[in-house]
Length: 275
Image (cartoon, rainbow, N blue to C red):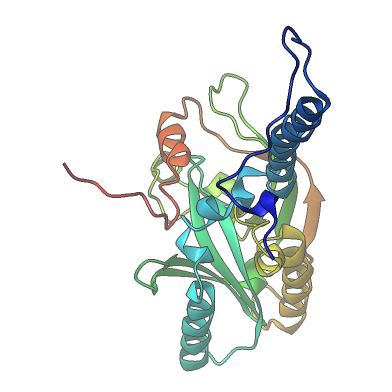
């Protein structure tokens, strides 16, 4: 049995008397049914989009640009580093974290951090080729101070950075040579500065491995135990954990502005290049 409303060949027609310019009851009903709906749909779609993605990094197409967030990438990195630790030292791993390292020239660099019972490992990992490019080992018994706080710059500096971070000291900054201080590629800096990775809020997994608080909760006890068990110069040391501003001693900031704005320190999909 067919109904007229479901058949496209027929349309309802209203009858009017001559000279009657007022809309009929049928016209009123059609206007009421047609007009509010598009406005309601557009309003709902805009509200839904803004509530789903209040932070631009939450949007899937942006997070997928970071190779670290792609399926299996972070798991492969962890397995590679587990195998390396097992082969070289056999130490017990306390945890893995994905953080952003900020060097002494305010450049951001994506890093994987491992805390073992004796060592802090800072790994530069290529998430595109899935390989470890550089690995820095810091004995936990050598770490004597950790600072947490907001980033600050000299009074005459044009550089700036929002947010908070932490700095780990295993040597005295006063003993750092002038050459290494002004060399942006120097590896002789006696401290390391970190902040949270921009992909922290993309999933529960990344929320866990990108939080500074989670990293600190494992790092501090590991350092204290390393000091107790140390047989060298680190024996008897006490770890100082301070809350104070973290000074980044840069002035013009042109190099870091270009690098950080384009995310050059991250394994990132940068689109096709060609003609």
